[in-house]
Length: 169
Image 1 (cartoon, helix red, strand yellow):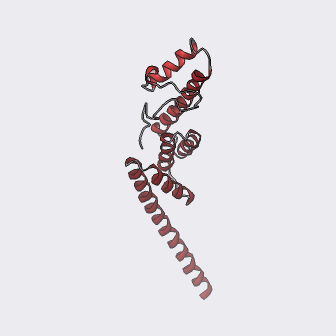
Image 2 (cartoon, helix red, strand yellow):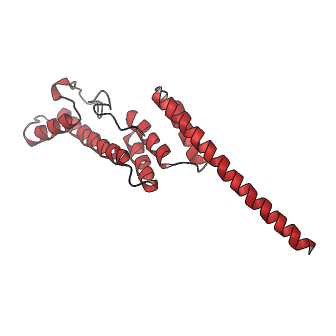
Image 3 (tube, one colour):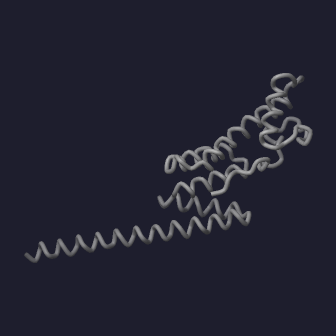
């Protein structure tokens, strides 16, 4: 009888600890995300990124934290890191229109960079390629005449990744 009471007490204790850990994790997650958003808003991308990476290593990531990390990478021209972060966000919340927008914008920017590199490397750049590049720049609210001529510097053609700002959380 004592053994079954002891087992029942231990089980209740474990269940209680599990519930409090969940509440505590939610609080840590919320506070951490708020801190990262504040750092991001204030332009401290490094602090925001480090905090989000810590949150993700702890297994406390959310769709919003992954989306914010994607935005940080995007603003730093770290496109190869940005895309998986957006996909992880969408895996957790596939109905987030802002993340879909940012992912599409990321792909537009990458395509534009390829065409800008081609513009530098090719002897002649006219016709369909020029039309496509101008249309992509128009969509991103950048004019070709405002883009500096850069020789042999891949992906350095666009000075700011904010021709069209990524959508916030």
